[in-house]
Length: 284
Image 1 (cartoon, helix red, strand yellow):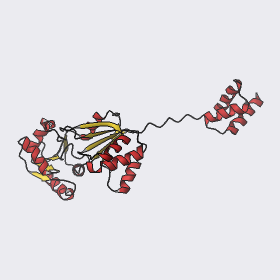
Image 2 (cartoon, helix red, strand yellow):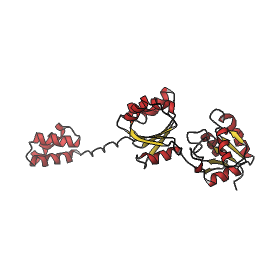
Image 3 (tube, rainbow, N blue to C red):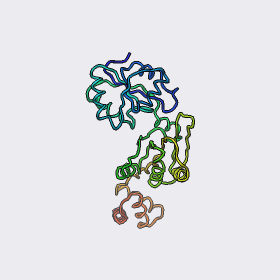
Image 4 (spheres, helix red, strand yellow):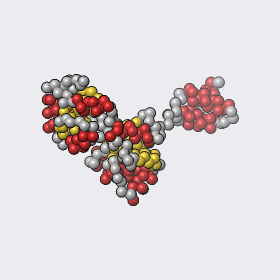
């Protein structure tokens, strides 16, 4: 049985209806009402499983109006199942706002895990999965988009983006310019559906391919992170640099050459190392 007055965040299939879990079916069947991104899409899902429940639309352009309504009904003791059109609600989804409001008001929130396009694509990408960053959709605002991309220039973790087909060419072009033609990418399209496709290639090849071919379907882009920056060499103290110069001089280098090499390895100025080397030789 569901807890009264609680919000249940329910993951739904991203393509294959067979991926809806038994617990998700049970939750949708027992909830007092369902808040859905698109009630028409959710109605098809419910009909497939023989579930009949009241539906309330909750999406980006009505969340300010319907969010408080849902919250009010939860406070009255009703249970609500929150779903998006596909995948996990609250991930690049207005459900984020509703969950935050419930957390602020002390309304219990539970999750019924389900398919997630981002993690599914990452698992298929063939790129490093130990550390990754989810970037969602890039903004259509030029200034925000540029700032977002510039912030990723040195990102070493694998990056995951969502992209619509009509914006794919622009995004691939921008990523190619920012990260270079040779950076690896996996383009994952129509995951779990009949025409599922994963193309592992480079940004240069992907951008060139879609300049001539019309993109179709929703994409998840998994992009290789930057190569780790080289570890900085530990700097030597002046005393250590002089000791190195003395060792090099003992191997046959002139004091000037020894000081020059010790300075290169230590990051100190050659003249400083040379002067200290001469002083040490005079004392010796």
